[in-house]
Amino acid sequence: AKANQPQNAEVLFKMGYTMSQLERYDEALEYFEDSLEYDDQNPFTYLEISKIYKKMGDDEKAKVYYKKGVELDEDIANI
Image: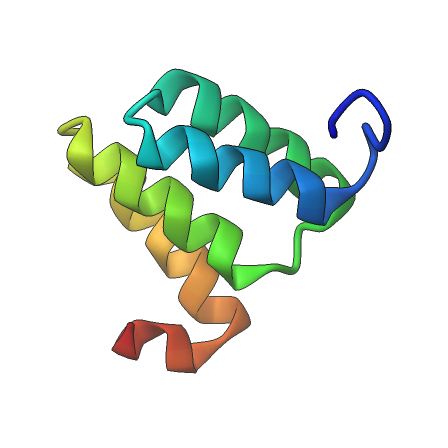
C-alpha cells in the first residue's frame, strides 16, 4: 500500500497502527511520523504515537504527543 500511495496520510496511519498492534514500535513510529508529514492535523496520529512512547517507557515524549493531539481535538482526552 505504501508503495502505491506513498503520500497518503491515511494509508501511512493504518500501516503505523498495524505495526503498533504487532508491537513493532520503531516501525510504527516511522509510519506515524511519515503520516504527519502529509496530515499534521489528525489528532489520532498524535494519540497513537503517545501510546507507543508510553509503552516504550518514554513518558516525556508520550506527554508531548498526547498534548498535541488534545490541542487538535479536546474530545480525544476522553479516549
